[in-house]
Image (tube, rainbow, N blue to C red):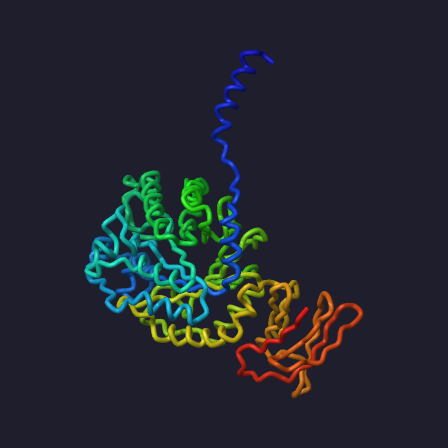
Length: 437
């Protein structure tokens, strides 16, 4: 090789080497945060902002193509006088929740905290003048729960964010993503000062049709981990986690399923914790015309099925513009709390067992104890009075119980456990058999 060419290549490699991005290695604190995250199977999601005033959901600005100036003026009438952070936190804790995720800024660009980066926030743009994110964070932490912040990567109002597949018409000549990115970073620095345990990103799908859109997610993740290495980062981009992400979420689907249509082709990571987010009714943000709340039984089943797949359930509530949680949501929180008070140990700290889902239900395990959750008793093999469950198991049970009662069982030579039990009532939310290994 020619010497001049050799030294030219050497110089090029030397210059490029510092630019190579090091692979993300989670800190010990981050790994501990992941472990704690998976031990708290129920989380509460809150979609709350000035869109609550319209009572038509969080996408109202986009779906109805509203004038952005008029929409921003609606902040002047946003006064959630009934907001009580302590009462909210009490309701979540009594429901058995381990953490809360609040929308710090949704796609409409309205910030629900005292940011210095834009006057379009709840402290400066509304007569309320208080910081609900700060108040709720303090109340949640005081009750031993964790606080996570949802943060939108897109903005339907700011002119520097390049319009994607959602939102309203914008002047493309004013788009400046690098400028917008600096705004995001400044807001994230502010949010991290509140001490959240996780940042929940959303919106990458807005430019899915543009292969080379410069999201620069790694720079956002590095910023977060640089300030707080133990803070978890997740992104609702409907695909496997990328470098720098600490948990994987599934929108309206359990891991490995695609009933909602958001998880087509989305694999399931075996390296990071998992989370399913779902609504109590149909909408994320408050809708006055959406009374279609799932029953307590449906919600408990969703939580149990999530835990059986090694995932958390992030259950959404859309608070009203008044600052109140809807009465049907509070009723369901109380119902879930009653179930969790008695049975929370069968999901918290528990995960997948390797036993496939059965027609009658699923199983969870904490490593020492196996729990069989009979969710569909009508699918049990029975004679009308007693039922028999047969399933593969590793090892020999020390004891099999239903409540305080011991159940008769046999174990075949090829490792199949057969349990006989009284036929459960169809009205029972979840009949749980405990197998001590």
